[in-house]
Length: 184
Image 1 (cartoon, rainbow, N blue to C red):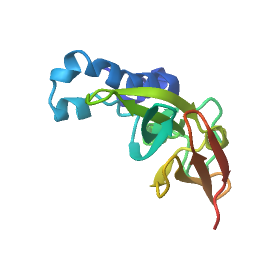
Image 2: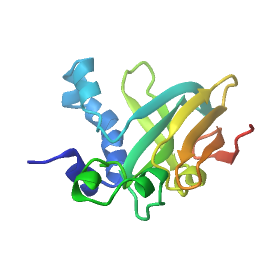
Image 3: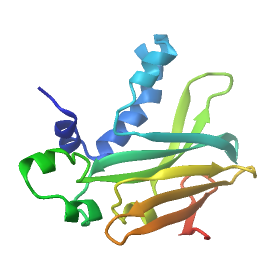
């Protein structure tokens, strides 16, 4: 029997992102004939949050911004407060299936062909400034008040240091972003 923990241990963030990237590709085939519930059910469980908004243009190409949180196996796990207080029995370790996961955030630039419902990912980038922190959770908020600019606030909690972590990301044209510590 395949369990969630087995899948988590076998999937890396790159596989989960690849699965997400396949959704628009599949839209041209069997997924195009599927109803919206089939499309929603095709997203991997390792993607707990997706936000889409704003608009960008680059020459004759334009589209919207998308931010994606992907849960994956951590290569080096920081100690957390919970693991310091729970005994290391097999039952206690089974009760913490997410103890070895990390959350990674990606920004994607999505374009739509003229008059067609199908979308294309123009560029997808990993937010290194957040992802290198190897945190277990990521929560997103998006602000898109200006054309050609999207501000993403990525927040989390570092259980090892008992502190809130926030990174502000400003995205512009495909592949271009700046990250900074979020204002308090």
